[in-house]
Length: 118
Image 1 (cartoon, rainbow, N blue to C red):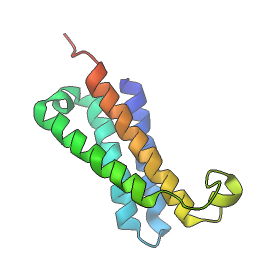
Image 2 (cartoon, helix red, strand yellow):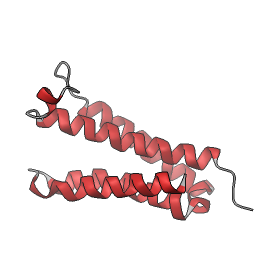
Image 3 (tube, one colour):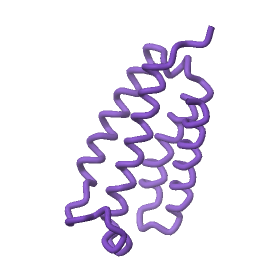
Image 4 (spheres, rainbow, N blue to C red):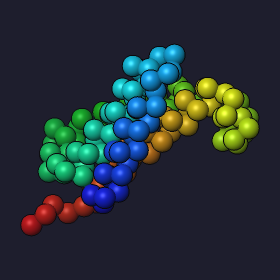
């Protein structure tokens, strides 16, 4: 899972870097860097993620991530089709927060299912 979390963290960093030309880049950089930070923490500092404070903070982040996903959920039909998201910024944003939430869920699974190193 360390490799998976490292790759997901790197993917989120790339997503954040690609926001340089977005109309609201700081918001989207933040949205992508939060899951990146959690993924790197799960890869390199799993004991801190698994701590009581870490788990509470992770759950709070997941709640905010789920609310953000609901808020940005694309309203146009077939938003997942290339001919839609290629031209619709709101479809791309919605799918971006879905991916960010999926990364957070992988971090949660890592924290809950992985046994501590002996």
